[in-house]
Image (tube, rainbow, N blue to C red; front, side, top):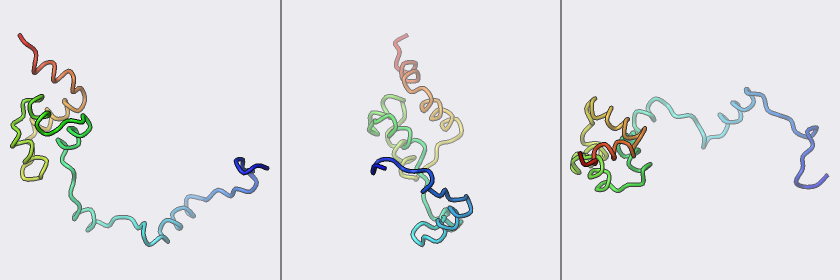
Length: 107
């Protein structure tokens, strides 16, 4: 048998219980506790969307008519977008080209 093939008779698949036990035995890979999750900071939605679009803060602010200071406050966690703005960000995430086209069209 070559080094690139494997015999199914030599493999012994692990049961889900064995996988769980092996994972919990690894001290460096323990599950996060409730305290860990509380201590961690969540990445703001606006920042995730902006990065996915590969835009700078300035480009994103201009393209979607958001004040630059407001965008920075959201991304740095100093402020949270209100409900309508969260909906607006969700629409941008779903169809950024269409939102840009609608906002920047000459009527």
